[in-house]
Length: 316
Image (cartoon, rainbow, N blue to C red; front, side, top):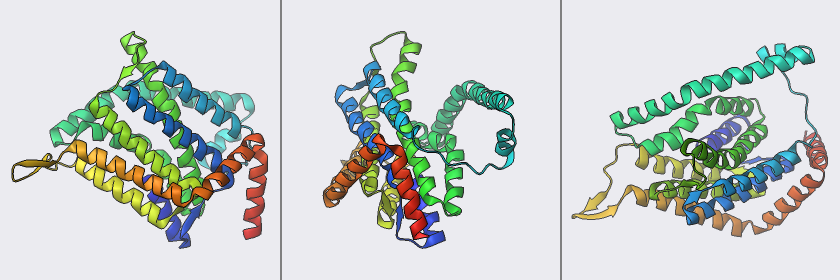
């Protein structure tokens, strides 16, 4: 809702371009996100997330990773601490990287519960809905370093790479993150019945899945236009404002309730879906192109990367 429009805005400031175009090799990410998003709608029908869902999301993630791991990699430009670690011999470098991961894991385990409780308590004191804090603000805070790196890349003229990184992160969230919920619930509850979803949670899942469906529709052409970035930002901002700020809901006229918080989530989700269907119908020819590109990349990831490199060289 915020990150993608931000990357486009930085791209527009640097290039004044109308469309931010991704490399064709990113078709794999778009297809993986589409599959995960479509499957997520079944969770609302079931009213729960169980270990079978975990296995399916894991299969999507493993398939996605197995393809991108075969793609040729570019030598990164290391600076600062990364350059220092990268210059080490293999043994010390592996120890340093493992140590950094271990320290980060300990910090997350030690602070996650306190952070969540503090966030909910602060929201209660300030009159801000706790679901909004946990679903939108907490991820934004935890992913701020990722957004910062993507923003820097976009400002340096690598907006397509920045969008690709955020797209890949979205795939990870819709597979590993959601798929991991039943595992965490099973460990904490000691049962294998799955994580039940109440009405509010189903509404939030519907809203998030609808937003993801709109994102897939936007990127089916492997490009992000200015009007699409603006739509993402406007719809998200309106929905977030009505959910987070202390707006007097339910809203009544002449004693009759005409708008509730539940209505806001359902309407916003439906708007996302209607726009997604409209874009997919309008650009239906792009769906076949995307699928062919994804299949070609899956068979030989190096081919699309080479063609993208040749295209960039020709354009330059």
